[in-house]
Length: 142
Length: 142
DNA sequence: GTAACTGCAAAATATTTGCATCCTT
DNA sequence: AAGGATGCAAATATTTTGCAGTTAC
Image (tube, rainbow over all chains, first blue to last red; front, side, top):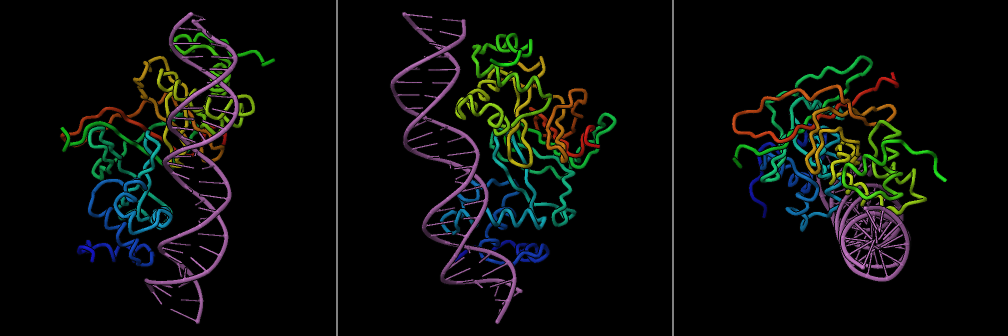
């Protein structure tokens, strides 16, 4: 009944100690199909007829907990989620790349090839994590 | 009935074309008194007995619209607001500084002296705005 | 078989809107 | 006096929780 799924779906779920269920396969499939970040609302729009809103919340939470996706805070106060790269361990995300929000198409995605520049803070601050979100116009919208 | 207010309150409101009301004076006073960012909930906790929750929403929106404060998105999905510096025109924020979130005291504040490092994006991207949020441990919590 | 996942209902929160009244300019 | 700000009520929207039934391993 469903289109053929992305080959990585199974291995990714297993690699992150997530049990393989229809909902998780579908939602992970969305992330793999679309190389951009997704908000809860986006996902609900796509699979909301087949899966409960609550299941989507819990699925996203499980994905974050197990290090499969990471969250991206944006100015519009709608949390987005995007697939992590291999170096994201469970509960320990290394978001060394920056995030780009296109004002035109409203897509959000990771620029994996762009590394977050280092910042020099005044004496006395300990840096734990750096989050960088750039907004503008993406390549396909120019 | 209220403690003596910060001397800048009046001039700041007027400079941003905001009419001077009790609520606005109080809420702006909170921002001036505390050199950190405030979330809606923080403000409600402080003045919620005197001003309606709706008024706080509208006040924050007005402050953002008129360029008096800017919003800071964080990983916990709770939007914070912080005073803008002089170069924030109405509806046109220049957030050239970075934001720091302390995991210890949970305060969020602008590091005005730290300028956002420039990023080099792949060809084809237009940069409009850069938002950088660093989390870690702040000076007073070390 | 057991633990984990899901759907449904409902509670708890958060945000927005309309409108009558009051305050600022 | 006129326009804008506020409070209250209520409509929406969002997120969380509990529990019983189902599914993965």
